[in-house]
Image (cartoon, rainbow, N blue to C red):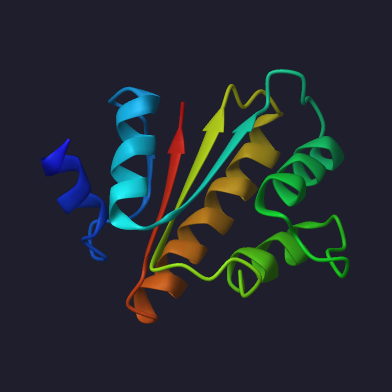
Length: 127
C-alpha cells in the first residue's frame, strides 16, 4: 500500500483509470495521503439526471448545483466545501448510455487537468 500511497500523491500521474487494486487498498491509501475520498455506486443509475444527482450527493455539492454537465464541471473544479490536499473519486458500476459516459469521462479529465494546475491530485477510478 505504501507504493499506492506514493503514487496517489503524484500530481502528474493523476487521471481517470479503471481500478486495478482493491477498493479497501485504495481507500486506505487515500486516507493515508490525506485525500478526500468519494465513492458512488451507480448500479441503480441509468439516466443522465440520476447520474448527476448521485454525483452531487456523493461530493456533497452545494445548493447551487444545477444538475447539468456544466454544474458538475464547476463543482468538481471547486470543492471548496471539501478542502483537501487531493481527491479520489470512485465510480462503481457505471451503466449509462455511451454518450453520457463519454461526457462524464471528459469532465473528469478536465477536472484532473484543472487540479494539476493547482498542484493537487484528482483521481477518478471506474470500478
